[in-house]
Length: 171
Image 1 (spheres, rainbow, N blue to C red):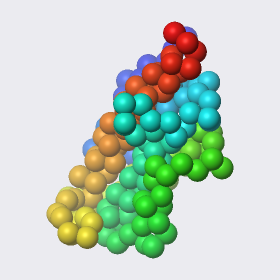
Image 2 (cartoon, rainbow, N blue to C red):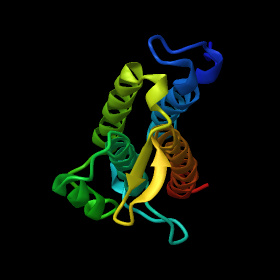
Image 3 (tube, rainbow, N blue to C red):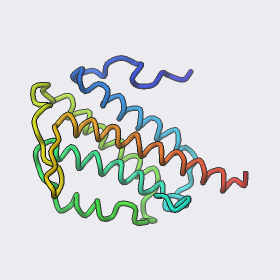
Image 4 (cartoon, helix red, strand yellow):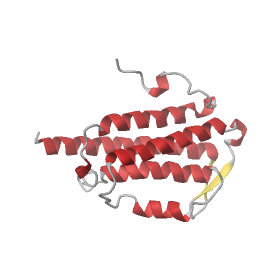
């Protein structure tokens, strides 16, 4: 029997109520990612459809965005390693597999959920500056944007996976 979506399963233990929607979105993204990627051949990871981003890009980007936004939320600037990861997002790497990229995303989501568990509600409205331009946001805004951004790219990934699976099966 199919279980309800994450947001309909109750609170995620240990996470403040105000962060439950973001936690649910990240959990749902992970579960959907596993489902959508099932049976997707690694040979198609870097193939584009209609000049849109490849599945491999979406997988890397979803992981990278969470990492970067949570860095900003902690009040830090991006490291050289994070900047290097950003530069490499979407560049075909045949050494990577879909399973490796999914595992990296899942690990990053688990890190995010652990950070949520440590969050103090009175600190969520603290101002944080983002990027080179130091644009204003808040800790809460960064957490929610990480979750919704992952959902947005999951939707794009689903379409690309579906088209490539259908095209390659000859239907």
